[in-house]
Length: 73
Image 1 (cartoon, helix red, strand yellow):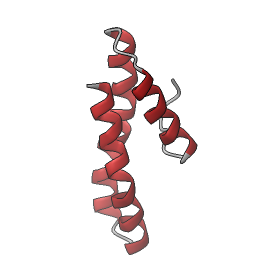
Image 2 (cartoon, helix red, strand yellow):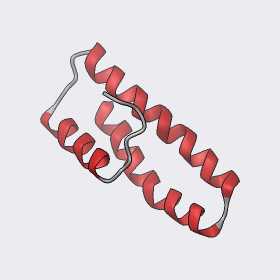
Image 3 (cartoon, helix red, strand yellow):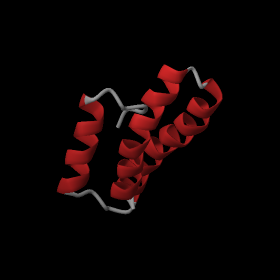
């Protein structure tokens, strides 16, 4: 589940960029809020249920290095 949440944020990234460039603030906000919530949720799920994985670490590192981190963790 945590990897799926991280991958969902990766999918959201190009949509956010396009909506920001197009000045679509409402759509941008509707995509951004779930992306931020999944950022918090994936870390919580992984830590709470012992679901940390090498793949998850790589995905999260990629998101962080691209500027997509919303929450510390």
